[in-house]
Amino acid sequence: MKKKLARTMVAAALAAVTVSGPMLAMRAQAQVGGIVHDPRNFSQNILTAARTLEQINNQIKQLQNQATSLLNEARNLQSLPVSTLGELQAQVDQTRQLLSEAEGIAYDVTDIRKGFEQRYKGGALTGSAAEMVANAEARWKDSVGAFEDAMKVQAGIVSNMGGTRTSISTIVGASQSATGALQAAQAGNQLLAIQSQQISDLAAVMSAQGRAEMLGAARAAAAEAEGRERFRRFRKGN
Image (cartoon, rainbow, N blue to C red; front, side):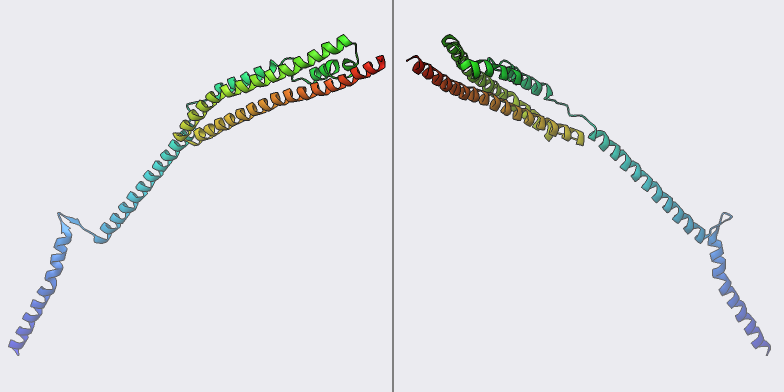
């Protein structure tokens, strides 16, 4: 009985040593230099640091996006470095000057009414023989002057074509290298201005040519009326 009891006590002691050995080793590993290492706390700190780093990266991206937006706004507000407004105004002024130089009956309602009263109808066709000759000569001068004015306007507009072509090339080249919305809009506006100037030139040509044709038609009508008056007087004299 004594031998069995001794064996049982030895087995229990060995079991205790076997169980306590790993626990002592774990405690020894967890405690280094008097500092206790907590794995759970360590993992939580790592997650917190990762979240903080992610927030910092998001803030950096936001700042980068804001900087890019400011650069784009500055680029969109940048003005077009070229302008053809001066050349267009000069061409329009030249055409207007040619129209204002119209001889005889000019582009004025009062002047037209007065000229027709004096040379194309009424007393101008029933006056004395000398007055009829003078009025006929005045009407001829009106027609010749009108055709001359139309040719001057046409020549001036043809000369404008070279400047217009240069302006279009300049604006198209600037629009192709435009870096912002304002530059593109300004280039488009200048191209529209060139188109408007061309339409204005076309209207001037049509006005000058129409004036010449109308004066020619009025001259023919006046000559016909004058001829009838001369024939009436001839018959009355006989």
